[in-house]
Length: 392
Image (cartoon, rainbow, N blue to C red; front, side, top):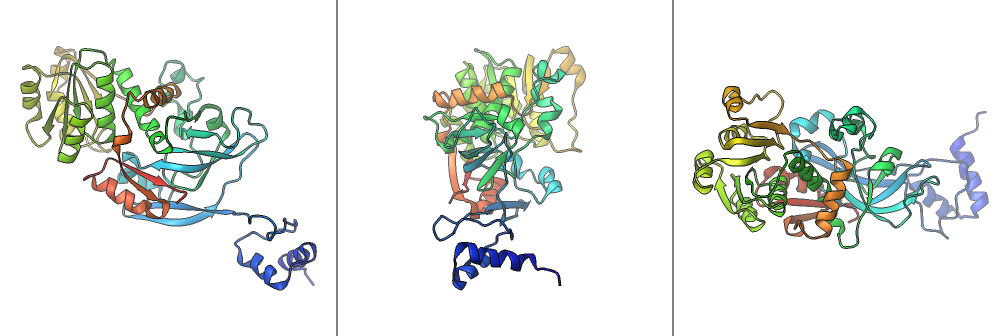
């Protein structure tokens, strides 16, 4: 007669641990995989926790609290307890996310290392860290030419499973090039801005932002507000911000915009009124709405640059008056993501308090209310930064 492996394990556990039947029942009511290896007595040690809570994304209106096994790390990997995870605007871009659903999102995380592979030398248990989800190879022709975010490796890397979980496994390539110690003066919540600020720093670096320029920021969400602050820190002469949301316009003014324009108005005409009769030297598009792209093209001065930090969704084409742009030497450019050096720049900007991120935090929720956080971000009303704290 075949031997039942579960029964065999039960007998061995009973013999080795000297447990009574009530304790044996305790073991089998836990969701452990049966194993014939004798565990330490759960009555004399804190019970193992093989499962963790996650927020599983199905759609913007359907984010469920579920469980999955805590990832097991390899010898060159680390396990991070996620303390704070920001909801990014890209997380609620449903046309982009839903095709991969269900999945665990979240890529703006800070946390504490709780387990280290035996071949990891740079980090230790207890380190406070920011972990980048995408990392470049640093050796391909794109990386060598400072186009790290065009690197094929960068687009394939990520941590496991995602930031809206109690724990993440950080693969070796991310350990090698995507883990950054969090300075003591940066809180876990403030550290969730490192990734979005790094993307902004990269965009303005590529756009050759310099002192004395007039800047128009179209869209005053998180990325727009960070662009406003960084442009001001870099010496912008005049910063004008637009949005359809009055709450965000007020915050744009608070964080450094000299003037604001309601986006429903004739933005190109209003820009000239507020900028000494001429368009802006640099226009930064921080919303994917098609009207924003059209406003940008009509609001740029001769010799100026339009940075498309956000773009319309696939299938939406932007009519571009090429002859007019050609005659006036106008540059159209894009920026995507951030490189390791941009991340380091962002850490320094937050640590030195040159960029105020604390006042941009409007909501914080525990993991079970992640769906509520997604609803607030997608509604885009009176909110800026929504943070999920998975440990509560």
